[in-house]
Image (cartoon, rainbow, N blue to C red):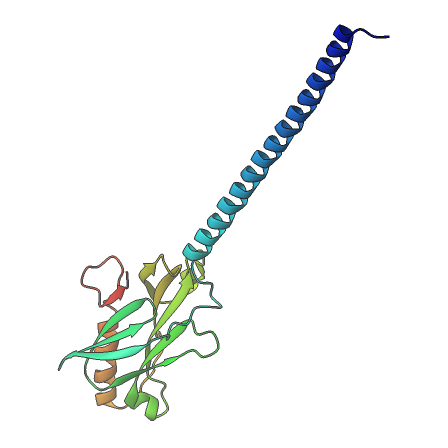
Length: 201
């Protein structure tokens, strides 16, 4: 028969083993919980980063419409302000011009001389094109200038000018009025502080 002292030693050893096992289990649980917290934090940060990227991502060409919110405001008896999506163009208040959007792409706006258009000569004297910043195909246009860039929209605005006759050359009034409008828009230039074309902030 085992002595009382031996029995006490056995019981003490058994209790020690149980405590060690219990502590080890708690340690694993704590470690696992810490790992879960780290994974949750990482997922949260990744989600926030994606949301921030989406918020600052420029609109794609498919989403952009140059005529969105378009309006013409009279500044004074001599001046009109044509406001499009991301830009403002100051124009003379002559009552001799109008505009039309390219409904196929919604990326360009044509300004034209009314009288010439009504008599079958088109009358176009300016096309404002909104192009993606990485698109440099405008360099192949026969007559153009860079009107400005809108980084928020991810667009570069190009002013493209007519190079052929868009009015009745036999009509002196048409020739003079068309020339006035054409000469005016030729002052559009992103590098000029006096340019009538301005990019919205």
